[in-house]
Amino acid sequence: MSTQSLSAASGLWGRHWQDGVGESVAIGGETVDFADLWSPWFNSLPPGAQLLDLACGAGSVSRLARQHPADLAVTGVDIADRLPEIDGVSLYPGVDLAALPFQDTGFDGVMSQFGFEYADTGPAAREAVRVLRPGGGLGLLVHAREGAILADTARRAVRARAFVAPDGIVETIRALLGIEAQTGREGLAGRADYLQLAQQATDRHRAARDSIAALPATDTAVDGLARLDALWRERKTLTPDEALARANGIRDRIADYAARLDALAAAARSESDMAAMARLFTGLGVVLSPVEPVMRRNRQFGWWLSGRKQGAPEP
Image (cartoon, rainbow, N blue to C red; front, side, top):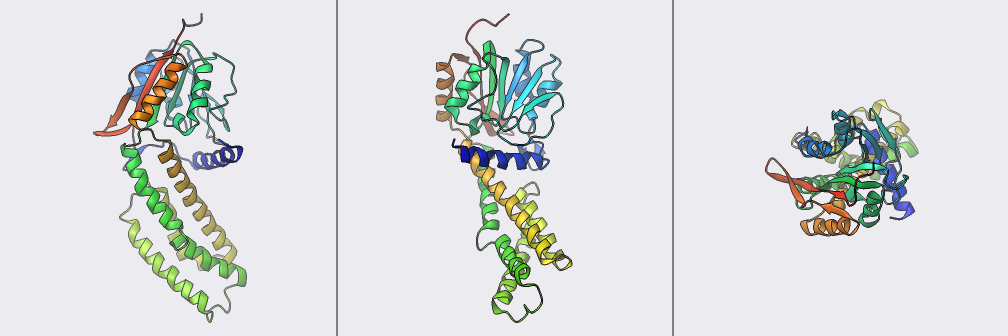
């Protein structure tokens, strides 16, 4: 990944986790729980094991590890330039998984939940194995390309892009507020271009407002639409510059969301992709269990890849 791409990803995910998001996987607003998957893996580790959580985000797996009775110590790394605090976890933001800032064989376990697959897999796998002690455990939960998450992601991405398209509601209202901010509201009543834009904004706002009730409240694009609705109703109580600044913030929020959805779709792995990933780790000296599909509510959500680094555990 280029320096520019890393910088963009760092800011994108930093804004996401600092926005108060606690979990990244949900159905109908309810968090999907994977504790039953992780608990046996934690049980396989020695008491007081040192764990590394790759692409830890808001710490779903880190928190599970800290709650485990074996007194597991957790370090979390993420590409995000900012991370929310996770109780009892040492955090390293702005870390590329292809260049971990740790010494060789420093961890008893390396884990990741819906994060490892976003990295450059080859270098990231080599780094994960490098920092793992002989006999140490590897546990990765990876997005499934044909799974339930990807189907929902595609629908949400279409909505998000439509909202921020050049002819979508967000850009129409931004253009209208831009004219008001540039020239002031006085004397605009006779401007044909402004009046035409105002009618388009009114029509698109009405259509978007009517659609909110039928869309999932957990969709960030829908949240942005609700914020835009509030702005449209309150805009006359704001200065033109204030109204435009709020519209710009809504646009950026939805555009970030669409970018994260695109990243998720690109990161997801098919069955053949997972076979290739397994061969990669095997070649690096990890003895793997068979890759397993992870199901919830009769739908596939991911793939589970686990194993141990060859060699006797260090004393």
